[in-house]
Amino acid sequence: MPNASLVGMARPASMLLVWMVLFAATADTVSIQAAETGRPVTVNCDVQNTACRQEISGTEVTFDINPKPVRAMTDLRFRITLTGEQPKALPYIDLGMPGMKMGPNQVSLQTIGAGVYEGVGTIVRCPSGKRIWKAAVALPGIGIAEFIFDVIY
Ligand SMILES: [Cu+2]
Image: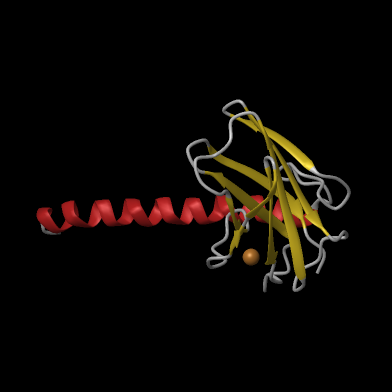
């Protein structure tokens, strides 16, 4: 007969394991979906063809990457244009992949005009072969706008 206190201690650990497995499965499903369909539901920015727009707390955020086509492993110019309330400090961009830990990759931006910010960064080639990347545009004092887009490898 199992020791009651051991069973009691084992339960939270196994629940955590179940939760982690479920979480991993969910994240994987999303990624597989994204990799298999040309236009996955997660993509919200057609940056290969045009700049993207999003509104956050009354500030309109326009996001663009050049040169196009947008490729991995080369210098890319990121441009953010803000209309409305301006951030309390320089905005910056954290590059990553949805549902994947890719290591820190931050693009610093400089002011190049009224409400216009630019910086140079590089997108790496994901070992998994997946090509969907995310740019989290941080606007200090306002919030974060997330743009999700395809990259050419
Ligand atoms: Cu990745």
